[in-house]
Image 1 (cartoon, helix red, strand yellow):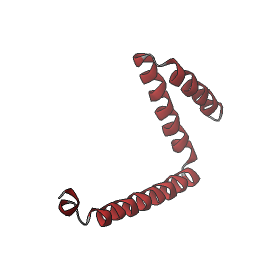
Image 2 (cartoon, helix red, strand yellow; image 1 turned 90 degrees about the vertical axis):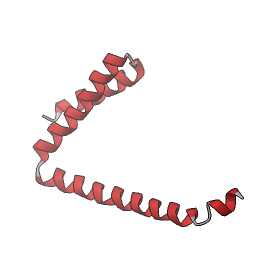
Image 3 (spheres, helix red, strand yellow; image 1 turned 180 degrees about the vertical axis):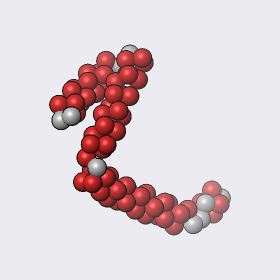
Image 4 (spheres, helix red, strand yellow; image 1 turned 60 degrees about the horizontal axis):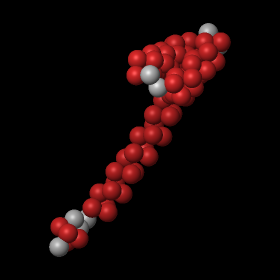
Length: 80
């Protein structure tokens, strides 16, 4: 009974997977385009995202995540 009720879901899942893969490819291409054209703003946004993770980890007290994000933030700021 359950299999009959959900017939056709395999096609829907395949379509969702294709949409996901297409979205990831387009997003990656846009990020590479942004980085090649506007490096400074790309780096500033990247740093802001990493620092947000550091602040969030500090507030929520997640030391493992905090140490990794802090290292990434230090490396990211060395390019600016």
